[in-house]
Image (cartoon, rainbow, N blue to C red; front, side, top):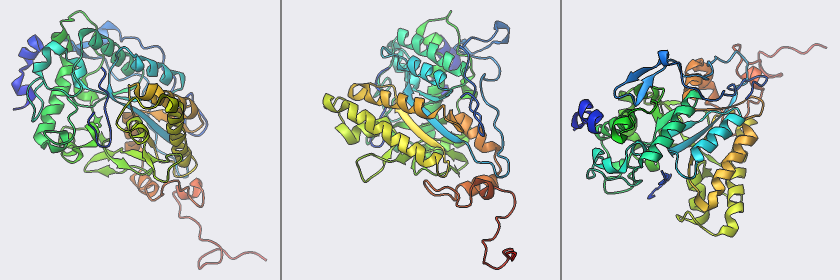
Length: 424
């Protein structure tokens, strides 16, 4: 039975890691020549009261077009593509570590915007946990817990500010169930739709579930804002994608891919995370903090403290090598996933911050959200995108970008039929 049927709007508004490939938190440029980046966001301010139209119980609202979204422009013939980099956060929420607020400041200081994948249960207080009816699990069950009212208030504050600065609010769903025995990989299309409906519902009814009636609303309509996601542990992608397509989503980032240009898969942009170099190893590593941790200290999040600095440097250098490979090569967007966690002494947070500071202010680099990347891809000539997908990992066009993306046929090499005859 769908969430919207189980919990009627009036009723809710009146009452409402185990991981294989990727983990999840359990705690709650300036313009440059050739490729202008997003303008530095001004301090987040709420819209004029006259522009606010409350939705439902007032947890969310319509305030007009999102501020600070760059207008996507189609590449001109022969123009080199910008280097896109997407930093995204699974299970985004503000807790005592204050990493959400910290990385908002890091982003603003480096002309970056990001995607925050909010876990719906972080908007549901512990004492109302039974309102969550997870697929294939008993009511009130969650592998990442719930939140308290202060945590919800803090998270709402960060979500509000992040959106007003041009960042994207996606979803990481709710209970984060992985593996066998009811994990997301075993869910049907309808169960995914049910989970998505509940994730939306908790965001749209936090004022009712917490009793914070006088708090300011979130400045967006979540039904329209939500256009993409990453599944827990990167499981269940096939059925999720079908559900997402039917619900009007525009992208999925639950897969694993090489550093190549994205294509559409079953109607959605496939913005999978990518494999990047793993310094000191012969194999490549998924560009996510959790996966670096597993290959460094095993499943424990608190390994040998003497290795913390080394492990953080290893992740930072691997991401920078992946960036440089794309920047100097095929210019494929670099997709990076993270969690607001203090695994191994917080060394991965330090590594990510150093990568942001290193790459986001470079010429022709745009550190953007998935929404902004999808907008740009949608604005391009499909023939140009198809040509970009022919470039392999790290492969720059042999005849240069101007020739490769020209709207005229490339000249034939000298000495072959049809080539111009050299003058004597």
